[in-house]
Length: 119
Figure (cartoon, helix red, strand yellow):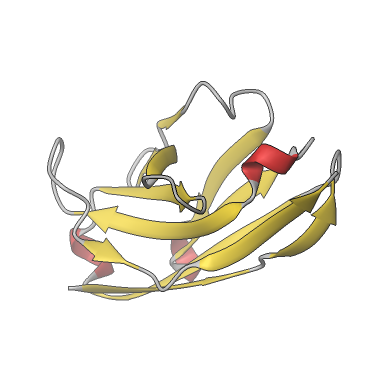
């Protein structure tokens, strides 16, 4: 099992930036992919960005392409989400997640961090 702890959320004005961090511990050597998801009030949780733990291949939801960047530091067992040009519709609780195999479910989740973008 992998334990995940997010940090870096907060309140920012539209057009601003935030960087989220996700510190992983436990069986990190068995991690295949890491991902960021978000859930806005009264909406379902949605995928934001993902990154391969070994190699660094990344992919994004269309809604954040060109604005968000996912990255990792394997030595620190940490994944980041740099969010630029934030919009009010980016307001949500952001969750970090891990999965252990290609195509599998994301089975380890953090507690979430709130991001609020004011207009």
